[in-house]
Length: 442
Length: 83
Image 1 (cartoon, rainbow over the protein chains, first blue to last red):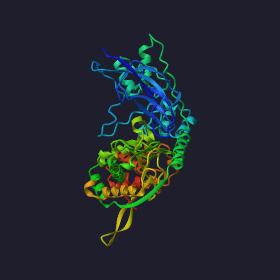
Image 2: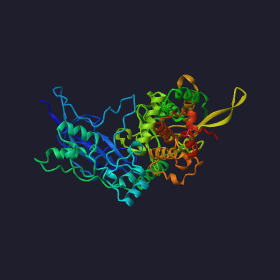
Image 3: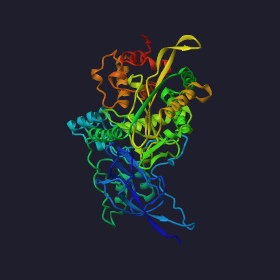
Image 4: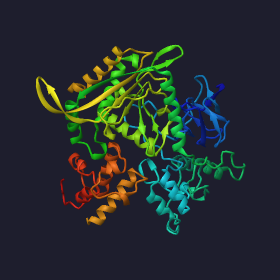
């Protein structure tokens, strides 16, 4: 018989600037079988709500932290009994989300948000109209609630109450099917049936409802907490890291020709933007200059295990989130663009996963859309380099003694002088340039 | 499609990209990217949404010409005006 060794599922670190987090919702309960990579909880950080995966397979034994309580990173949240030995029989598990985090091909499908995502203006409007956002279906990108959604919700409810389809999270739907629970008979706190509601309906006659039935944590003032998190990290960077800065301007003729060729056959929603090619080049150059790809800690430099490319995403209303592209060196241009689009969309309007927010080994910030030609960024500690990408602009450019007009982009490097010298940084930018100007590399 | 329908469609498409957008204040010939703080990914999503809602294909060249409300209306009503 297999032995059970309990493991602890701890509050994960979702970025260098996270000290603590709050479980908003548990998607599992004691007795559930989980597999490594399953999303088991939704955790709220200073920056955003995140779908958090577990790192062990086994059976959930105890839930140690109830929703709504803020705990430091590393705090045990639940215990997982792990099945050891070859006799262990894998139990088929209802997986809340599909692919393993490492799947290199298509972008992970965006999980449906379970708690409402809405900007400050939308929240204000909802408050004015007396609309409970939790009951509003968002039609914006990534499921974000728009002003139109709120207005629709504010109209008389007569139409809305016709029982077209019970609103439920995908996981709740699957669970209801498995347990034979009729979703229409499940009462939901706020109009959306969650897994916990289904379980409550299933066991109500026998047991009292589980403790996890607490309402979700109130919506915090995200703009303020986000600002503070960024402020803390950036202040630490400038306090600790002796930055040096390099810059080079790269002829994008080859890259833009490749884009035009790619985009001719792509529908508008999948067209590749220049940033995808630049990100690819940055990731592949980091692979070739490992001194810039990793962390500075008390022991000195620690090289990253592969390139995990961080991409700074600015949020509407202010603040930055840096999701990570773990397999950036292996993605083609179209795949890279799909990934970037998916991550940006979910960072702004939906939900990122814990594995997408773990520490990057190098970060790229792209301010090209803001119309600036160059950006010298601040390194995200404990990383040792940050690449800045400006706008692609047409400029007079000398080639083979002749002056022509070419699309060019300025790529910069901010690097930690404790870890590398300018010579290494210069080599990095040379490789980025070479990758972007060589037709076979596009 | 009438210009009014086109305007409604543009407003709806923009709201999916910029949920906080106050379209009432946007001048017809103002650059939407600046007015609504859209980056290239937002703008691509807007163009895709417009294409989806209207059933019209949007080429890269069309997309470059969709930067204002007026140009969007012109595109949708098929009165293709270029600046």
